[in-house]
Amino acid sequence: MHDGSDTIVHEVTELTHGGAHVVIDFVGELGAEQVSWQMLRQGGTHFVVGYGGVVHVPTVHMIITEIAIEGSLVGNYVELVELMELNTEGRVKHHGQQYRLDQINQAIDDFKNRRIAGRAVIVT
Image 1 (spheres, rainbow, N blue to C red):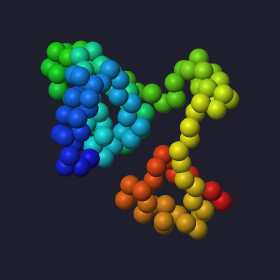
Image 2 (tube, helix red, strand yellow):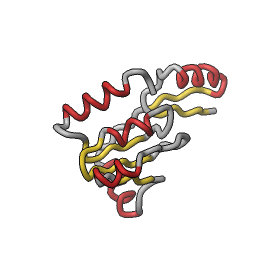
Image 3 (cartoon, helix red, strand yellow):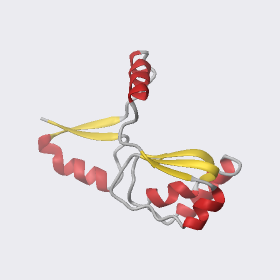
Image 4 (tube, one colour):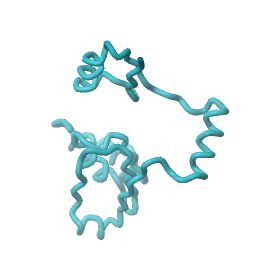
């Protein structure tokens, strides 16, 4: 991730008074997959949605802290229905940027330099 990962874990632990109950990792690589589980409190759950990296957690830490790490591709049907209802009510905020196909190099550069807020979509 970056040199400040220890600081981020400390800040989250302080702000949440002992760690987060849930961390949802939409990145799943670049160090986010390693930092996310470290932000959990006793019995917390790390949901991995993004993919590409590898999660390395000492098994003794998992046992002592009783944390769980779960993968989620989309969610289940009931959650999908609930999400669609929230979206219909206007309560879901989408964050993304569109790039035309001829802007693909700019999109790649923005991705590499972390200038994309949300998702980037290439359109024709």
